[in-house]
Length: 86
Picture 1: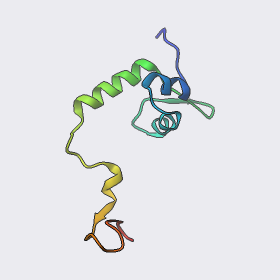
Picture 2: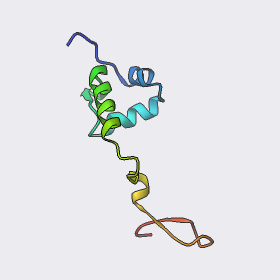
Picture 3: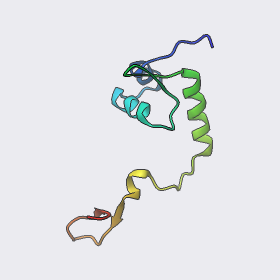
């Protein structure tokens, strides 16, 4: 492998995303990254392959992780969405 690993700032620049989002991707166990001390590093080729695979296998009708924990309630009550268990 003759490419250099990039850090969070390099990943943000490579994918045109915010540094905050790049850090979130680094903390995602499914995203290809490794750590050197406390710093996340990424191989650009593995990131591209991962994003390509994810795009091909993504179900457009799948419910997001964020909305899985919410339960709909009637409009006009204390909130349109309420977290389960609340």
